[in-house]
Length: 454
Image 1 (cartoon, rainbow, N blue to C red):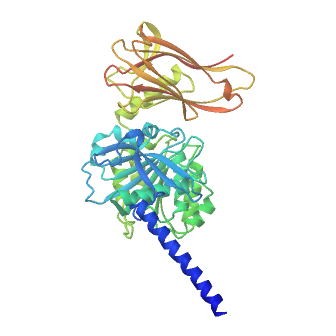
Image 2 (tube, rainbow, N blue to C red; image 1 turned 90 degrees about the vertical axis):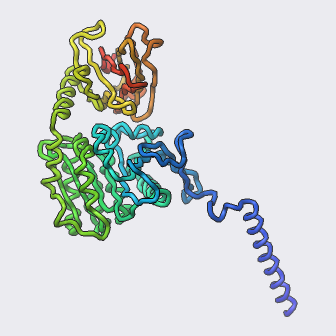
C-alpha cells in the first residue's frame, strides 16, 4: 500500500511540474500575455484611421472583443472628443443612439441625424460642450432593443471608461425614436450605469416590466415627446406612468403641437446639455433644476428664422415630390428650394448639403406592390462649376454611390432608374443622399424624384 501511495504522489508531482513548465513556456512565448490577453477588448481606427485620437472632434472607430462563446465581435462607432480635451482631466460621457434610418456598417452613417447634425448647426454650443461622446452604430438587421444589442453597447461603454478619462458620476444616454426605445433597453440591462436616461420620441418597451426592472434604479429619467406625435407619444406617456408607480425620478416633457421630429431643438440647445450636467450620481438636484415647463420651452425658443425656413422648405419639397421628406438641407442665401426654372429646365428643386460631412437627404418609406415592376426614377443635375456625390440607401444598406461631375454629367444633368421590384410585397425605406465632395458649388438640381410602378 505504501508503494502505491508513493507512486500516486510521484505521478501527481510530475503532472504539477508539467503544468508549471507549460505555463512558463507560454509566458516566454508571449511576454505581454499577462497584461494584454489575446481576447482583451481593443479599439482601432476605422479603416486605418488613428487608433489613439487626442484631437477634438469626431473620430471613426471600431470596438472589438470576444464574446462568451469565443466568437470575435465588433461594433463600429464614432468617438467625439470635446474642445480643450486632455487626458489629465475627467470628462462627462454622453452616449447617443441614432434612429432607424441610421443603421449599417460604416460609422459615418451616424453623422446623418441627431446630435452630430444638430450640434453642427450650433457651432457655439458644440464649442462649449464639455463631454466625451460615444455614437455606436446599430447593424442593418438589428434594432437597439434586439436582445444582443444592449449588452454590446454596455460592453463598449464600460471598456471605453477604461480607455478615456470618464467621470463616472456624470454619465448620460440619450437617443431618438428607435434610439429612444434603445435607451429603455440599455437601462433595463444596466439600471444604475447612467446618471440620466433621456429618450426623445421613443416608443415604449413593455412599460410594466421595464418599470419593475428599474424599480431600484438611482438614475433620473428624462422623457421628451411631441403631443402631436402618434408614433411615440402614447408609449412615452405609458412608460412615465409605469415608472412613477415606483416613485422613480422621472421628468416628463410632452411638447404641445410638436410631432415626431422635435429633437433638433434639444440636441442643438445648450440648455439641454446643461440640464443633463446638473445631475451627478449621489447629488440631489430635484428642487433646483429647471422643470418640465422649462424643458418644453426649449422647443419653442428654437422656433426662430431657421426653423421657419426649414418648415417652408419641407412644404415646398412635399409639393414637388409627394410623400417625400427633406432632411439636412442647408439654407444658402435663397439658393435652395423650388425654382420655376433652373439650369435650362422647368420645375426644379435645389438642395445643398448641411455640412461637408453631412449630406442632404431625400427620404421615403414605400410599400412595394406585388406582381408589378417598381422603380425609383431620378433626374438630377449639378452646377457646371461644381460636383457632388449621389448615394442611394435601401433599408439602411448602401445600394449606389456615383459621382455627379464633369465626367458623368458633362452637360450638367443625369438620369437614374433603380429597380425596387425585388422588395415586392414588402416595405422599403429609401434614402437619396446628396453628399458634398468639396465645399464650393455643391448644390444639386432635381427635376424628377418619384417612384414608378408599371
